[in-house]
Length: 265
Image (cartoon, rainbow, N blue to C red; front, side, top):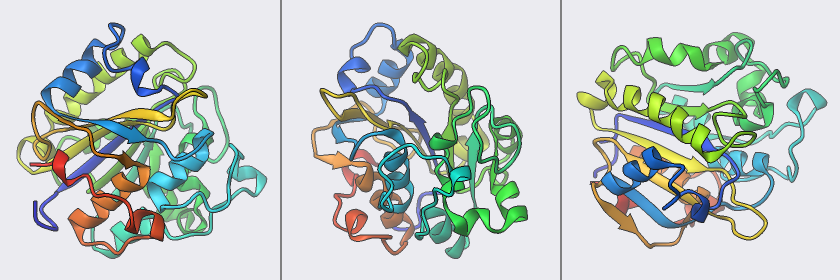
């Protein structure tokens, strides 16, 4: 795939399950079907514990010195360049969709919405411009409308399910059922049926015994019935997007990470 050939990338991040709790688990039939039908990274590692530093790594190539699940409303911020900056500077569009977020650009926990699973509200470069933040960091309910047209869906999409849908507070079967309802809508949307787009489902971290997690590529840009045993991590996923779009790497972490090119057509 040549640089620029990817029209949209949609990343869904699930929670706190090592790969052995997902792949081959009868409680996750939909996920396992996706993994079999498309491309599975079988040797993919999260980069740390707990959740937030992994979300920051996925979107900025660094944890910015943050090592816990601090809240942005408590002056916990990551004043570093991030993928939203690079995406916007390249002329592409982006949005963060957070399930159960009570209002756009909300930095406080609310019900099953966890701020720590919404990395973009930690970047002052995003949040300091309130109107722009409100337009880009939106409740998940907005996704359905944006999926109606290829031009309506941003080029870069990051989706954070709520604390139940992401398997954090609820069983694997609950997260699998949520994905079985949401993923087909994405794959059937004009952005995926008329353009070369990529859906990524990845887990933020594993558990105390293993930080190897599942990462699945689906959609028209992904290989079919493929399993990669190459060593990848969250920085690899970030570098893959940068590479496909010709974006400058954000840090040495992503610059030096292996691009997941073998997972793509």
